[in-house]
Length: 105
Image (cartoon, rainbow, N blue to C red):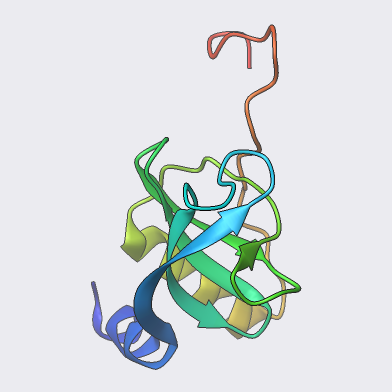
């Protein structure tokens, strides 16, 4: 992590906790939430082996499943970019689509 990312991390990180997600992370089998900022949670997707960020409306429940597979530093930089510009333009990878192979996507 560079210095700005590390500073942001120190402010938004939480003790890792399992959060549910309606599609792939139901009760007990959720994902590890590691940071919260506003109405956004940063979480580790152990199915896809990477970090993601999603909006949430209820603490403890991830709003949507994403499979970006990013390193934590990339996720933090995307948040910093959104803070600096006022716009969140980073790409977000949605859930798998039945019948579509990775090569076709």
